[in-house]
Image 1 (tube, rainbow, N blue to C red):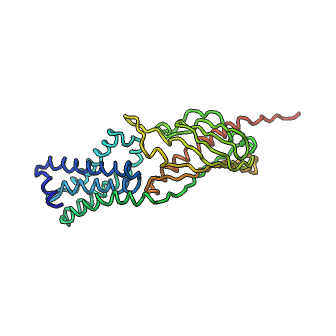
Image 2 (image 1 turned 90 degrees about the vertical axis):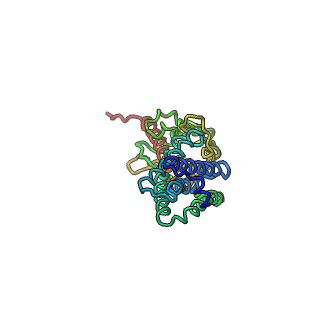
Image 3 (image 1 turned 60 degrees about the horizontal axis):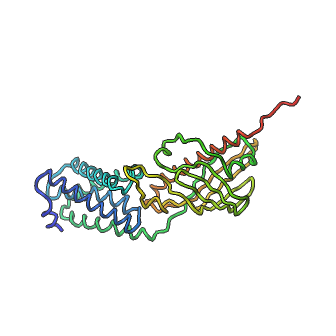
Length: 327
């Protein structure tokens, strides 16, 4: 491995830089395609180990048996990350929004990888080839390990107080007319948002259709406790977003990687006669690291809840009959 690296790396400074970048991007790209389309994983291998390799690998190749500064090290790491990211966009592997979501963790880990690579070529250059082989091997290995991990069910609860009694609110919970166009920036990026809701039948067994911009959630009712609790399963769901891209992207993570399992609306009558309306969604996703992607998922689900609850509040309060003074 050591002899191979020495053979393929040019002595010329500029040629070596682009050789280091090109080889690292090519290896990272092939591992990404294998992980996504071959193994079917969006996880630690992709979002942690790959940017770590991008930083470490590019710096090792660039600085192998050659003196470089720390500034040059992280510059080559970020240049490699930029070209790798451009490749994801150009070859329609990912869209702009998903890349933007992954950017914070990707930038941080590329910087960390660049620092590791710089330390290796300066302190233990003999370990450079072993480190390269280890990172190249651990990425698909981790993807295979993650494949068998069961996802964790997560709940998101959002609430709002409505100036109406539970019976008035209930009518607007089970179905509601078309919502106004969203003003929130997040819904202008391609993230799916609710348009209206319709219901077929009443009681347990009725089917509610919550229509989003990308399709409909089909929600068989499992608990119908009027006017206190409406609970439902999710039998079908649409894509969670429409990717922003130069091309028409149908990335695998748009299908069965964010899965909504159940939902409910809970209505509680308050002492002042108002209603506390709580909306809950139970979901899981097959994207890791969970702690990172949960931040994004919870935020988006909260924004969807807020949009629906605010619409229900507006409609329920508008239906209240005005009070007249009796003479």
